[in-house]
Length: 354
Image (cartoon, one colour):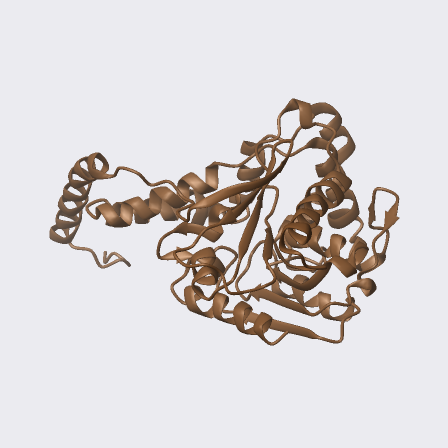
């Protein structure tokens, strides 16, 4: 009987020897791998409120842009995916083009932060950082760059304070949370979030990570580790792999009330589409987002499908709306080789014309 894989005993033996050689080399490689931390660009703390810190990135030359960019990242991960390593850094690309880049680091919520809600994140933290930048730079409005969930929070802030946002850039930001291809949305729509938060308090980071991994269980839990064997004898490749792994699993817990409100208003209520988004006592209407908007989405994004982002065009009030469709995934839009030129070039040129 012929095997469908057409493997001879000799080929199987050679493959076993190759695997053994790779594993042996891996022991030496892992001894060589030293510092694989992320966040390579020098930064300075300029403002703080509780655990939330505003950092200014410092490049080799002074920025030429008069209006600063504030990056608002998602709450579920650390923001340094945009500055992962020297040759994979959106921050570095923007600094090289003369932009003045700041980022909000949300820190690691603990039990004392259990009752932080969306009003805290939008009005207190994003709003506080923006007011600080407006005052320190002597400008009436700043450029706001919101990423993923941070883009949702940025849209809310921009709708409520359009006079303080000169230009709005969103990256892989969901607006329609109930597109048919959104598996994460399908999971959360039937969730009893009140029971969950009342029981758990803050949402454990490990639980969130496991949920994301199970969106692509074979690829994210098995395939990438099988593939890792092929790079065990390459110290640089292993360093890059471990750096990404460290970022993935270095996730903060989620403040319980903010999580409850986000699930209810967006994943379950689809509030941008159906109405009903409230930040504190204020209603959010994307029709008041009248500043120029650049919406960047990833074509192979399994967390924020393209249609979830493209829905923004029909909802925002601006007449200056631009889209960039990036050929890649939710993470590739920051770390792929093509992204290192295409994304910062697009952002810089778009801002320069405004």
